[in-house]
Length: 347
Image (tube, rainbow, N blue to C red; front, side, top):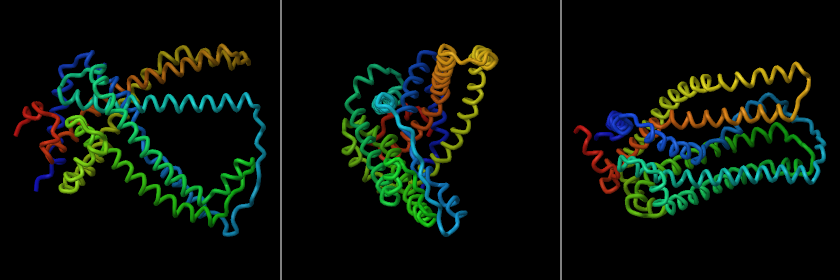
């Protein structure tokens, strides 16, 4: 039995080369806009699992009698300070939701651009805004479910600790509780994290093209995709393994290029920031204007670096998505969105 994920790597490389060449600044710019929202809007998984990986090691070095309990008095905050902090948090959440919503629509813009070999951001965005919002809702519910499972398990094990924090006291749990918590939360986080990553990844890479091709919602797209996934589970199991390895290779390459770009782009900002910083240290005074200037330079640098990352990751994103679309079309011709572009491949 031929394994499509193994056979289609070279084809994905060839299609990526033909899609991106000859290099056109306007085309790459539009693709960079799409990729920027894909990078910022999808959201990464595994954070909940990684946050507890150090617990077993820490607990193993503790005496069996447990940790001594102590309390910390938190400084009182004025109502204005609390309101400001809550306002900043609410603003960050709002911005994150807006970016995630735009990123969900951009998934359809990206797939149609690859399908037609014509990149149009505004036209495709208006056309697929409804599907994108449904995808955003699906991702939002999936994220809430993940938070409910992992957060609920954490509260069951350490609810009294969080209650103490809310009351202004810090009470450390015993070593045995930390060990039990780690033995429960680490495996649970891994299982939930892998399951959510697979669901989210398969939705983005395989269900979105079906939604686009057959004008369906997310759940209806999954209903169409499920028989193919179950019937050809070996193909998709191979795809997960191969795609994981390819992601490692391309992420390493992208990180190296981005690291070089980060150093090069930092030079003009450092030319301004370093003298200002030394002047501030030498003068012994920190003025509001200096802080604003340094913060502005940092924000501009991060913005320029993010734009550079979007441009650098254009070929990487195009390669991975075309690779997934090729495998999807191989497993079920009814789901093939590449059309005439596939026929250009050598047999």
